[in-house]
Image 1 (tube, one colour):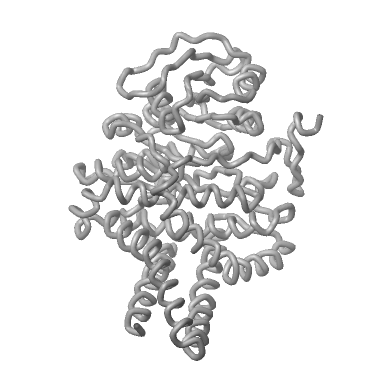
Image 2: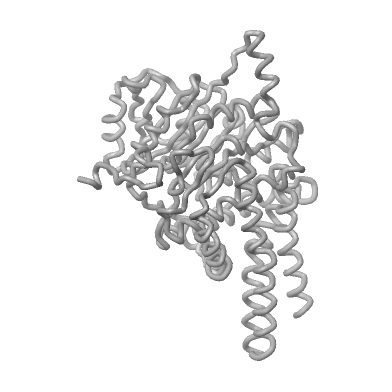
Length: 472
């Protein structure tokens, strides 16, 4: 039993230590930061080349009336010329469509689809009278993946950006995307996603925890660790398995070649793995992470909504391990994405939770004295040594990429780290264990509620004004 505990412990700490080490700046690959392409851009500009690639932004909307105004305002502020936006109203039962009409002054459009992918019936396509590059696809309800397939069909640009309705892009985000895709081998990428509740009037340099609760703060740490450590490391290993649905960027033709999105509970993981499977047959292609392309997305503020979200994420991991098992098995020792998904995400990230819980329970029952004390000491040592280090490295990487918190946030961050280590980690284990089992009984999407705030009205101190509906 002691040998089994030791083996699981060593394997469990190997991957975090590996990612902490591999995410450090001196492992940065050429072209990883967009400034690596600026000399090439300058040369193209001097010789009359078109500098901007065409970008189609797809925003699936199902009952998004509380956040849609913030999204539209974000689109109007982008410093990019060659882009179009498609809001896909996926059979909303609230006032989403009315809101879009009011904000955009919609008129019928004759834009046609390609006929490559399947999706639910499109009732009508509209174009904004105020902003001719913004369209609305009004269709029957089919789910997020179905909406994205419809958007891909109507998109006319070579690059496709997918956003959640509660995701807003910073002013220069598309410029960074354009620079990253100067590398023709890049066929998909993920942007950096920060927490919308921490957005300030300096969205490219400053974050604030002032008006956030503890649940938001611990998720901020989660996002920093996920993007600046795990995703960055996995991209360098060519093993990224999740391009966040909140901000993904894809070559449109590749999306069509892989058959578009599958109607599943985890469409973002699924499409990433589909592209990884596609890349396995095209050796020069790759997936990138664009740290300079920054967006903000709203996160759950209640335990109820957080539970919905995290259980859905865990179900998505299980769904993909089942759906892609043949690909993983065939390429387990030849493709990094298969190795990391099977060993880190599934064996260590999921199965180990059951094994370690079972071992602890067994020891407590059969030797309730020393075994329990030894286990707790062992676990606390692990938390202090690796948990705090992981959090601190994430905060340091956040600063390295140009973002900082105010000095007033220092105490909040300290308390958040303690909460993360001694409370939230246990809750996360529950999400993994319960989510994995419940997948086989309930595959519902479980949409998270929006707060209804108007983030476009945010002030420098971080105060958030309520939407017009809530004010009235």
